[in-house]
Image 1 (tube, rainbow, N blue to C red):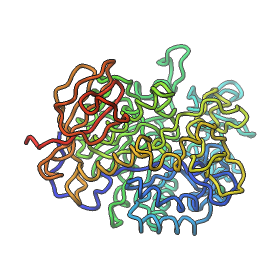
Image 2 (image 1 turned 45 degrees about the vertical axis):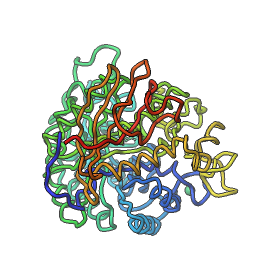
Image 3 (image 1 turned 30 degrees about the vertical axis):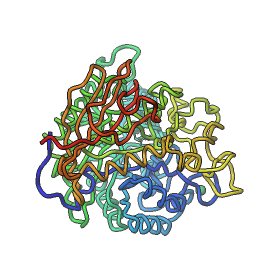
Image 4 (image 1 turned 30 degrees about the horizontal axis):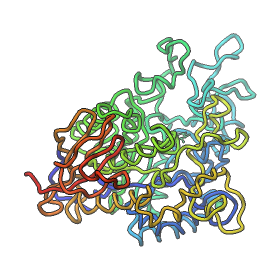
Length: 549
Ligand code: GLC
Ligand code: MG
């Protein structure tokens, strides 16, 4: 499977980039208030450069009441005081660029905060007013309009409608504090085009588009109806059926208007969609030369721990990317999902698998999105006290995403493990005592640590998967292997002269012989007596060998 052989251009940097997701409030706290901030990000840029990533994606740092961790934006053109100032942002991006790191920012166009001036104006204006028309206000059903306008459910649980004192209802696909915008309104479109320009002018290299599939709702706001099996929530249909509030065809018009804006700036400004669609084919429609550059491929994250499952997901993604002519993305974790160490079984088992999955992911062509802390092998924190949990979904569904958002351990023997300055306050969520051994300082220089595995893998990926200066991702050639094992050549044979790289992952129950794959380069498990001729279960290795073709 190969991609365009056109000579690669620096503007295409995103095609093979490793992007590191910074969940700003949990990355590094510079001012000691227990909450990560932009100055904290800036101070840790050298760490990220040395780790070997190409870009950072920063989660929202805009003015916000923080009902949903900043995904409830009150002012799209300013930094929330918790995170700093626009001056801090400028200093951070200047330093990042000087270190060769690009900056992707999150944009949240589906909804605003209820503290956004537009929503305030909508509430104080009457039903039918122009102010209300920027959102989705409707009369209720029932004799007195006492029932919600339709049967849509919030992703965070409960009805997607909240009633205001004059009797109308407004739509919020997420928290009531996140009212959905009316994207059929020209002012809404103009506003976001201007917001894009605001950040592009400040030098951002790209956008991660939040809920990119959600902005257009089916005309007439029809009921979902009885297609949802009893006892299930509508959200469980995601990826299986088209809901009237997601993945509507007209949403693509928005991206066709955005692309020329991105293209009008120099240096390759890109956009990646957080989109959920019924099928990989429908997801692929978000990507293309006249729409977005990429969409997250969450099927990889959702794959179960088996060779068949990963093989299927990889083959589907590669086939789709060949059709759309753009390389795919690979994601194992993010700020919304349980960390993959824990998903894969937690403890030593989960960590072994997570390390193997990292080598698999980093060997695949396309771009990779790492979630902060996965390079440390952090597990999900499962036992946070309920009263500390801040995810708005927790109160409505009992499910909480706080466990993957615990502030990073950097150094030292006591919490918050260097997250803030010496003498600073406790972090907004406490790290467990076991994280002392997982801090950046504790792992640095230990060749068996997960951090050093990531550092080595990122360096080798850079050296081997593309010819110097090229941004064209390589290709995958599946090699013969035992059942339960994935083996493929990756990179481009020309990349490292006359050698090629091979990745082998053992997802089966038995160790397998791997003596034939070449000279060992990197192993996800600490070397044992049989390394490199035997690959234990739940591990992966990279080899190099003379190019075959
Ligand atoms: C996206 C974000 C998530 C947020 C939601 C609402 O799914 O990743 O964190 O809660 O959108 O903005
Ligand atoms: Mg702070």
